[in-house]
Length: 225
Image 1 (cartoon, one colour):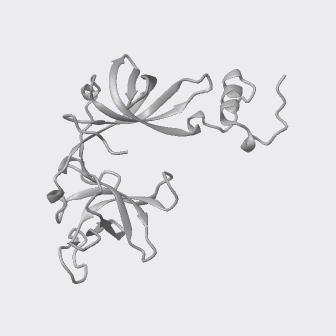
Image 2: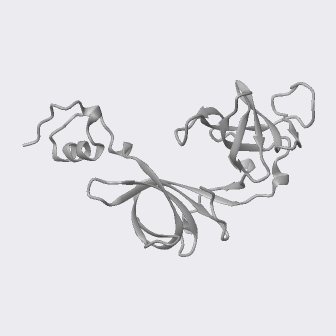
Image 3: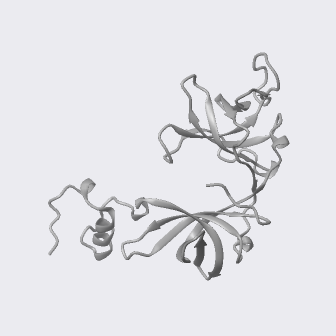
């Protein structure tokens, strides 16, 4: 018999998931999807139905069960020259003391995906990290005069991008060594042997791995972590 005297917020998530499955916590407001997520980077060995086999660098192949409605992101190499006025981009960044944002990665969206996730929001990948999806605005100095125009200025510590979105704007510094990648429309045919992937997987109560989100590189591209 399992006693439930301990407050649920202190219990091991795996134990809670097992209790829900067994019916001992019927109606409990808890999602097993809250299990800790890990990033698994490697190459695809094979895709068999909804089970993806991935070989991490220097490791043994891992079998990962994909969710019924898993989300697939596609990435390819992007020319830094694509960071120009009017381009719609997404940046993961960390806040700096002066209020600016230091980019960790920049995604360039195709015109067909303009407006995807527009706005500025916090992320849980690391303390102080953010995601900003917006239009690159004015080139050069001066003040903002148009919400669809942005600023890109070369400086010793990297490009300065003023990103404008509905309801606000953010200044993002993009160092020269930051990955700049192109976002491609989802294509599950790219989940082929040899393709490079980053899989966001969670360990299940039985020890297996499951994922409902992954990124695949196109034409041999290696998606950044």
